Length: 457
Image (tube, rainbow, N blue to C red; front, top):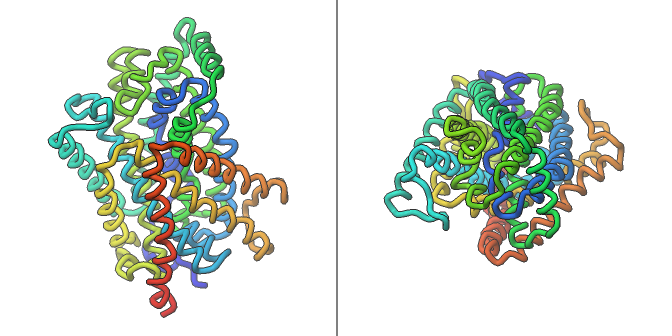
C-alpha cells in the first residue's frame, strides 16, 4: 500500500513545539466551554468530571493515538488505521462518521467566538433561552462566516503556518488564565469557599438529563487526541514527536481546566454566571475587576479563533485521504502544487461548517460527542485488531502494561461512551439530537455502497 505522505509535494512540516500547540487547540484551547458544567450540574460534579474524565477518557485515547500515529504516520490518520485493521467497509464508516461529527464540531468555535464577542457588544448576546431576533441572528452568522474565511486564508498557507499561529495563540490564552487562577486563589478565604461549594454539591447526585449535557460538555473539552493524526504526513519525525507532544499536552490541559474552575467557584456558583452567555469574562470581573474580565474576553476570542484554525487543519485532511481512495469525489484529492495543501477539501470543509453555525452551543455539543464516540469505538477496536493481526509492526510507542494495559485503554473510554448514550436516552430534550446521530451513522453504509465501484476502479 502506497504511503499517502508521498502524494503531497512541497510539504512544510511542523516540529514538536508547534505540534503541542496544535494538539492544545485541537483538544482544548483553554477553559472556555466548561462553564455550563457548574451552571447545569454544580461545582462539585464539575470538579469531579474535570478530574476523572482525563483518566478514563483523555489518557487512554491519547495513548491509543500515540501508538497508532507512531506506527502508521499516514495522512488520513484514524481512517487509515481502521481500514488497515478491519477492511474498507469499516474504514469508510470511520471516515464518514468523522466527517459528519467534524462538520458539527467545527461550527462550535465560531459560535463560541460570537458568544464571547457579545461581552464587548451586548447587542449580540442571546437571551436566557438561547434565542435572538432575526437581525441579531443574521449579524452573528455573518461574524461567524468572517472567522471561517480568515482561518481558511491561514490554512491555505499550510500546516507550518497553522502550527506557528497555535504557539502564539497558546501563550495569549494561557497567560490570562494564569492571572485569573492566581488572583482568585489568592483571595482571603478562597480555598475554604471552594471546598465548601464542592462538599455541598457532592451531597446530591446529578439529574440524568443534566448529566447527559454535563458529560457531553466535559468529553467535548477532552476530545480530539486522535484527530491530530490526520496530518501525520506533515509532522517532522512523527514516530518520535507524537508521543512526546501528547505527554506534554495532557497535564497542561487538565491544569488549564481545573485551576481556573476552582478559582471561579470560590467566588460564585451562580448558574446565571456559569453559562455560555456570561461565562469566564463575567467570572473574571468578579475576581479581578473589569480589566481582568476584558482580558479574559479577549483571550476567549483568540482561543475560539485558534481552535477553529487548528481544527480546520485536521478536518480538511480526512476528505482528501478518502477521495484519494475513491470513497469521495476525486476533486477533493486535489492539492496545491506550491505547498501541498488539499485546497478543494479545505474549501469544502469551510462551506459545510458555514451551514451549521446557526445552531446553539448546547445542541451542537451533544450531537458532536455522540458521533465522535461512534468513530472512537472503531479506533479502539482497530488498536486491538492490529496488535493481533500484525504483532511485528514497528511501534515506536506502545501502550504500556501489556495485555492488561491494552484492555484498560480500550475498555475505559467504551464505558464512558455507554454512560453518555444512556444519559442521552434518558434525557427527553436530547432525543432529537440522538435521532440525528442515528440517521448519520446509518448513512455510512449507503456511502460505501454508492462509492464502492469508484473505489475498486
